[in-house]
Structures are given as structure tokens and as C-alpha cells.
Length: 69
Image 1 (tube, rainbow, N blue to C red):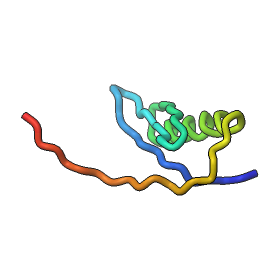
Image 2 (image 1 turned 60 degrees about the horizontal axis):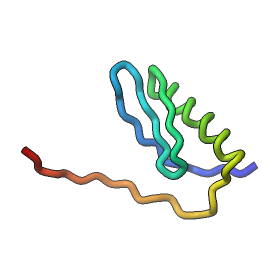
Image 3 (image 1 turned 90 degrees about the vertical axis):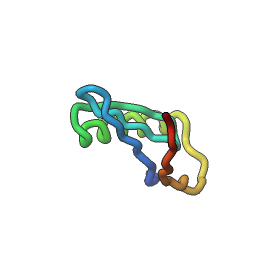
């Protein structure tokens, strides 16, 4: 069994936390951050059983600011 470190992007939507894995495209949710990440982990593992990822490097993650009216 292989292991791989993937990225989780979290945001809050009403009373739920939504977790997204940009490398795979899987999304899940939960009432806590821990539950959202656990649900995302399960969804991603199931997805990868059918659609394995090629060996690539991890994406770079940063932030930026924009000005708007």
C-alpha cells in the first residue's frame, strides 16, 4: 500500500466545514474540521482505488491580496 501527502483546503459554509483536495478534486464536509478532513480522507482513498494518481510533485500553495471596490 502506498501513502502520499495531499493538500486540504478548508472553508466554512454555514454550520459545516467543507474540505477540498485540489490534487484529486475530491470534496467532503463535516460539522468539525477534524470530521471534514476524516471524511475527505475516506472519499479520497475510495477515489484513488479506481483512479490512481501519477507520481508528481506536490503543488505550491501561497496566498495573495487583491483590491476591489
